[in-house]
Length: 195
Image (cartoon, rainbow, N blue to C red; front, side, top):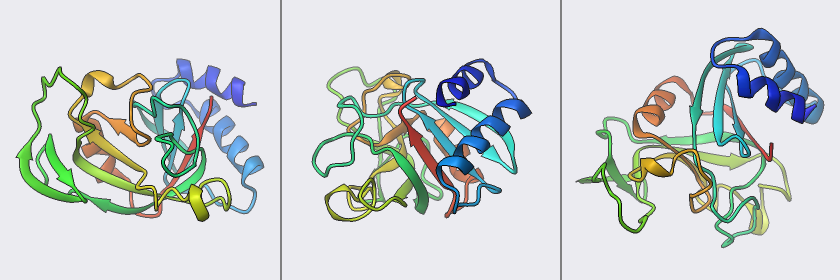
């Protein structure tokens, strides 16, 4: 079912009830105790895309960048964790596009949008901080996504978007993450899958 889902999502740009139904069917089967009626963010690692579903409708699809080191939840691995998460906190209200955030606070500096040197992994514009919901996978102990500071965030290195290039977080273009931030509430579900 996951491969079929990816095939539908690869071709779907606008709202398409068939692919949304397939995604929700998969999520209900995988996580039967969880409700998926509100905002759901689905990160497809193989596609390097984030799909925003609300009220069983596909709102948007965005290119992203997940970890260069691949998938995993271990602390210090620099990998992107898989599984079910939720947006636990949001940071960046009123921060300008390309505004640099350090420790979730605006530094007052703007990143160079044409930065072409060594990737400094700057966090820019907005942060959606993720909390894992699967004990032993992305919650608790040395695999806790929240304790690892796993975010969906903007990046100064927008050229990296669409490739596995981050240090574990899910990177987005600044305009995209600002739009997503404005549309997604705290508590929104996020599922990251290797497909």
